Amino acid sequence: MADRMDVLTPEESNGKTYWYRIGVAFPAKEGEGWTIKLAATPVNGKLVLRPPFEKRDGGKEGGWGNNG
Image (cartoon, rainbow, N blue to C red; front, side, top):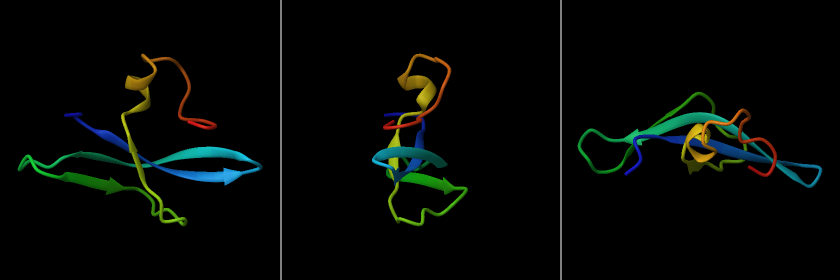
């Protein structure tokens, strides 16, 4: 099980998808479920959990960016 996940929300603009990291999720201490901490609430109501970017790309520079 992952030690944490990024909480992202997508925004469509000009035919592209932009991803914004708005929080973090981590396994609950009890071992079942996840605790989610948000710094913002998505206007579109959509949340996506993904592994942290630095773990997905081997630590390269950048971010989720376009079509993340």
